[in-house]
Length: 370
Image 1 (tube, rainbow, N blue to C red):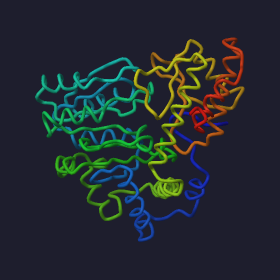
Image 2 (cartoon, rainbow, N blue to C red):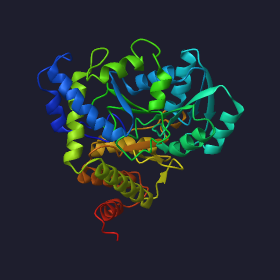
Image 3 (cartoon, rainbow, N blue to C red):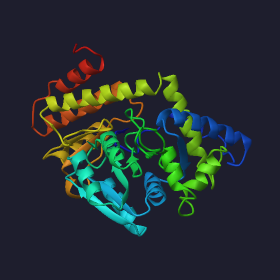
C-alpha cells in the first residue's frame, strides 16, 4: 500500500534503520553529539535565531507558542481545523481570543488582518497556518507578518509550518515562531515538534510560562545540546538521518524545487482529467480535489490500486481527497498515483482511460513539455 496521506508520510528505509539501533540514554556525551549535529541542520532549515525540539505532536508546539508568546489577546485565522485549534488553545489558557474565519478554501487577506489589529489594541500575538492542511490552503503569511510588523513590531507572529517546513522556502524575516512536526515533510513517525524562534520571541518569552512547555527552560538546556526533560532520542536520531539524507540528495533547495515540480505536475495532470482543485491558493504540501465522487475515488484508490490518500473533515467529509506532496517521493510512485486516479474515473464511468494523467505528469516532471 502506497501511503500518500499528508501526514503521517512514509519513513524512508535508511531512517527506519537508524532508529532501529540500540536505545541510547539521553544524558550522555554520545547523544549530546547527535543533538548538536541535528541542531546545526535545523538552523540551516529554519533560518531562525534559535531552534527548540520538544517531545510532542505539532499541537504541543502550537500550545507552547501561544502560552509563551501571547500575554493578552491572540488573533488567529480559522480556515480549517488547525487554525481553529489556535483559538481553542488561547481560550483554554484564559487568554482572550479573536478569530478571523473563512471557508476552508479561502486564504485570509492582509487587509483583514491589519483592520483587526488596528481595531483591537490588546492583540499581542497572531497565529496563522502557512499551509492549512484541512483543505490544502496556502495563507500569505510572509506578507501578513511584514505588514503587521510595520505598524506594531511588538506583536508576535506565530506561523504554523507543520505542513510547510521542508516543503518550500519560508521567509522568516518577520516571523517570531515557526512550527514544524516530525510526521510531515521531515519523514518521521509522529512525536517530535520543532519551533524556530526569533531573538524578539526569546526576549518576549523571558522566564517562560508553564512547566513542560516552558520554552525558556528548553532554550537554556538545548543551547547545551540537551533537553529540559526526557528527549525523544529515537526520533532525534531519525531526524539527523533525514536531514543528512536531504543534504546527500542535493540539499534543501533541491528538495524545494522537486516538491514544487511534483505539485505542479500532479495538479496539471488531475485538472486535465476534469477534476477541480479545491483551495483558491493551493499549498505545495498537498493536492486537494473537491468532487462529487470524492469518497468513491478515495475508496477505489485504496481497494483497487493500493493507494492511501486522505479525505476531508467536518463539512468536507466525503467531499474532498488530499494527496501528499511532502518529502522524498519517488517519481514512479507519484506517476502511479495520478494514473490510479484516472483509472478510478474510468471505473466510475466518468471518462475513458487514455493515459492522459501519466502523460502530463511525466512531461512536466521530466521537462518534456518544453
